[in-house]
Every structure is written in structure tokens, then in C-alpha cells.
Image (cartoon, rainbow, N blue to C red; front, side, top):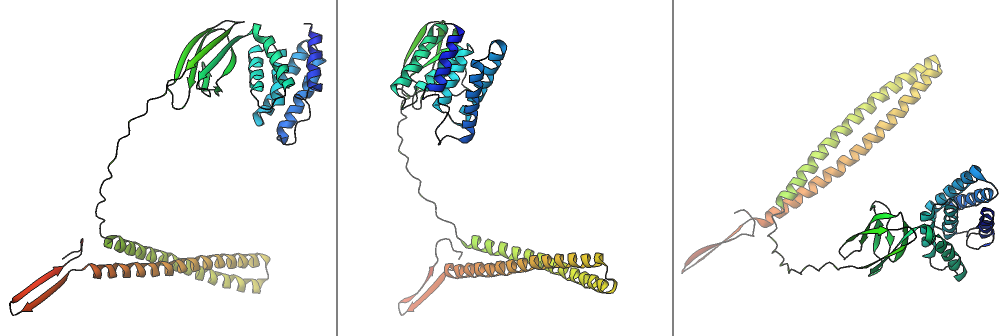
Length: 337
């Protein structure tokens, strides 16, 4: 087909087909739409250019479409990128873009026929691998597993030669094959995935819970730790209060100096000292409030500890009668005699 006729077909597709309409739906990301429209503009310029300038414009158009696809995987950008790749003789990539486009749900019959026709025209130029798996929906990699996988069933255009195929699906044994690919031929790989055997169910007998240790050390330790925190915060609060007092004295001196000199620098120094004094006073108030809260908590914890200790102490009962006497010791589990 003459080059100028190819250009006419491509331009008609871009300007007339609803699939490649310049105007995208309002739901698409605005940034993606900007890249898409830039790709359309550059593509139209390329259709009127020749030689190296045409190739450069096609490359820039493709980059704009790819930028749009990285934001929103829209069918418009997919189809246009496939056309540009076809114009650049990057047939493998163009074939795969058409394949991805044809997997989109909701395509009209006209759009499907148009894309299928363009893809079929590329088959003599590419080596096609068709992979079917039972069950469907397996992940497919070709040569490299660090790229995004495809989903079976699918058709993929690959470079001719030996290709390594990886197929995986959760719950099934991973499969690997080496395929010999030839340009212009379609190679079909049919796979029946083997389910991973279910592991036997082993009844687990729950262990008997061990007797819980006495809570006395825990309450006592909590009370001691809270008391230590109380002393620490009290020390910090005292230090902040002393610092605030010292700053207040400095402020009084600075204020007196300003009254005598009227120097704005003395006024600024007095204001700064007043602000610092207020900050230290606020910090001291916070620390004293924290000290009080911690002190109350320590008292409550220690009170609970003492109550529990009294309940757990051993009790001795003595009974005397004409027949004799006896003594009984009642001691809760875990208490000390």
C-alpha cells in the first residue's frame, strides 16, 4: 500500500472513528487528556510530513500517548498508540497494543472489527504465541518475570527464536515452557494446570492454659514506676519554674533599663524576655499538672496493690471442744503463707 494512502487511512481513523476521537470523556483524568490531545496533534503533523521529520513527529506522538496511558489506561490512547507503532514498523508492540485494546469490555462491533482487521494485517510480520490455560485467568510472562504479566487466554507477538514462557495461578503448580517462535507463524500453547495438593488437616489440641501468676508484682511495679516518673516530672517542673523566675528578674531589669533610656533595643530585649518567661511558665504548668496526675496514679496503683495483698494473705482458724481441738489454714492459690 502506498505511504500516502496509509496516511490517509490513519488520518481518517483519528478524525472520524469514535474510538480515536480527540474529545475524551469528562471522567478521564485531565492530565491524561492533555497528553492524549498532544499525541493527536503531533500525529496529524506527522501525516503531512516526510522523511526524518515524519519519523521524529511519530516518535513524539507515541511518547505523548504513552504518557497518557501511564495515567489512564484509556482505549482511545491504546488504539492510537497501536497505529503509531504500526507506522514506525514496531509491529510486535503494535500487535500487542491491539490485543490489549480488543480485551476491553464494551467495544462496539465496528470497533472490534476495525482493530481485529489491523491486527490481522500484522500477522505475517510477527511471531505470534497463543496461550490457553485450563483454568483461565493465569498470569503469563515471556522471558522475564520482572515485567507486568498478561492474563490467559491471550495472544502475544514476540521476537522469533527460543522464548521461555512462565505461567502461574494461585493454587496451581507453576509451569514453564520453552517455545520456538517463527516470524509469520502462530504457535499455540495449551496448558492444563495441575492443582497443588491440599495439605492434610491436622487436629490441633489446644494446650491447657497455665495458672496466671499473681498480679501483685505487676501492680507494685507499676506503682513504683509511676512514682519514679512523678519525681522526674517534678524535677523538670521545678527546673522550669526556677528558669522562669530567673527570666522574670531579667525582664524586670530590662524594663527598668528601658524606662531610663527609652532605647528601642532595650524595649525589644524586654519584650523577648517577657515572651520567654511566658513560655517557661506554660511549660512549668504543664509539667506540674503531669506531676499531679502521675502522683495520683501512683497512689491509686499502690492502694490496689495493698488491697490485693490483704485479700491473698493466709487465714488461720482454730476450733476447741471437749473432744479436742484443731487448727485450719486457708490460703488462696499463689499467696505466701
